[in-house]
Length: 80
Image (cartoon, rainbow, N blue to C red; front, side, top):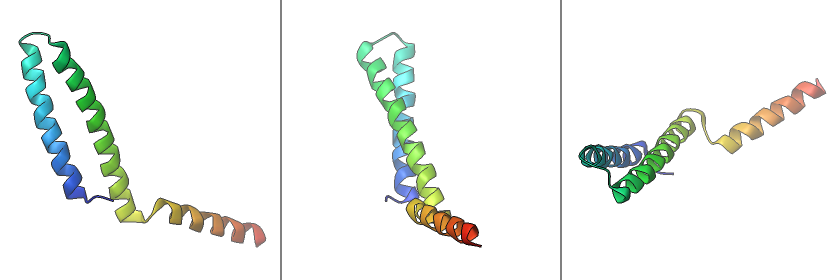
């Protein structure tokens, strides 16, 4: 798992590149730049998802462990 700072740095770099691409595309359409922009947008979506998931893991613990605890509590409640 990467750190939040590592993810943020990559988000900042990608955001700066996206701004450059928008600027270039505002001067005229270029299919290569448009394709790069589309890929960059998809990558930014992935990075933000990774950021949210990492933040949640830091706050609440590993997802698998949370599920295991919830299932154990559910079994205890049913047994009671």
